[in-house]
Image (tube, rainbow, N blue to C red; front, side, top):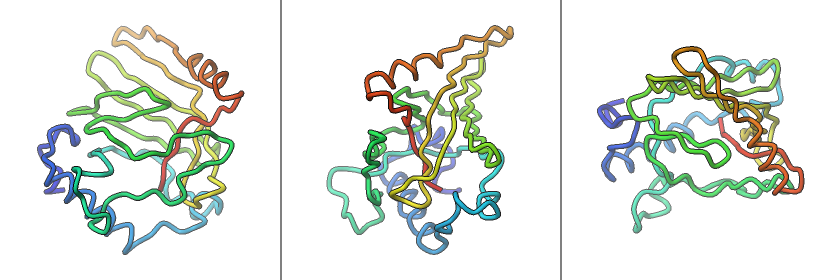
Length: 189
């Protein structure tokens, strides 16, 4: 946590801090990889069930001259076939993205709630004046065993006074532009 402390969830991280975070993450993933059946075996899937707190985001590639063997993120089989999901490198700092909608998470409480029993994921960001939630169902990727393909259908903004603005219909519109394909996000465990 020393590397990411004081970086506003990654927003103010220096390129050196970003590189260290990416290298440490890659090292951890190499030393303790997720089981290949993490999303298909119920006992394994229960390991990721629950509330997770986002502590840090950064670009998956740091700088213009990074050595690819220096810990940079390289997607395993970035193609998701008919899903038409963009699995390009993540290029944000201190933010989360769902179906192209980016929310600044610097110095915010950010939760990702995974419910294995009904195959749903919900991202929740408390902005102080209200809460933004984006969620939907997920299924295992056919290309990468530990990648969950998400079909977002919920996008709510709940104001402090309790008023809820429901924007999930945008995901229906996005699907129209993708020949009806509802898959519009992914995450890897």
